[in-house]
Image (cartoon, rainbow, N blue to C red; front, top):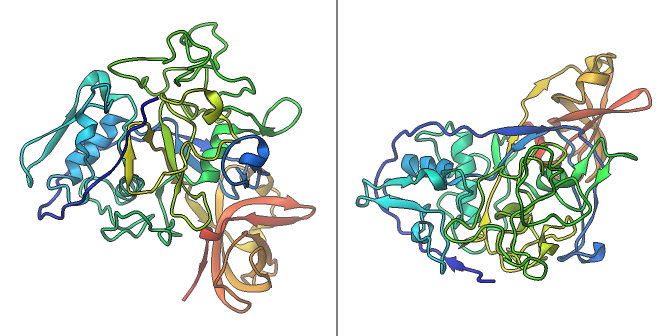
Length: 417
């Protein structure tokens, strides 16, 4: 296995981006808000510190595929005429065995750079993207693409591209973001309709059996294929060798997750927002890659593909996927109790406003909007809000007996000033 992982230098230059062709991000909906998580990490037979993963208290959309070379090329043409933040890495254009880039080529001079990718590479995942530049791509999507800002939005970066950045976390009013670990994990492994009851698969192909790294899905094929380096069991080792290494996204059409995502097992490992190791700024990566030496890194229990995923580094084995917020509709607390909510709550996010009462720090509180029907909000990990404050929270409703509970995460609770 040849692992290529390098630091990138960022040179500040003057210049202006211009509008480019709009990037269309195909997503799938992930509902079933408030689902239970499960243990992942070494204690579950995998790798990395133990953590309960996969519980998400809100509905969201997630990229059906990994971000592709063509999508990232459009981003570069819009925002990297001078490349102030090192969005492009020259290794991207080097397809030799030593680097195995995604064949994005740069031409021109600073202030007038342009980027292109050949058609046979366009639909393969981008690689050599740092975590910070994945965040910049998400900010750009959330700010309308074109000349939209890369430094504010889901993440407040303000030029930051260094090795730490632990304080940089997703902002509350996000539109697009790099997937959180829980968002990624749920979309990959959770199956609300699994035979015997909702639960998790071991692999993101709706299977507890390791995927095959050879063959291709087609009519009548049951699926369970992935692109990885099966060093011990496969004669050819790699699914796809030189010069491409990585398959087109969605190549294994019968090997999707329960929610309809593809390539969350193999192809490229994918950044997520998690800070995996206490005391270190290492961000999460999941799903394994075309270069992993066996299927272990594809397992749900495997929390990080490598233990040196510092956010400023780039590699030929790592890319990313994005999540999209589902708009939250404001609703009067009394309306929450209408019978129609029993079906609507499974499909939409809702926003409640009011005065915080009955505070249970770090777990739950009640919002009273004077409609006569206070609503309990469960939001593990929220902080900075006390009894008597005014706040809004958004998420999906679930029922507890005759009551309705809004399930949210800490980032979906905002104190009103």
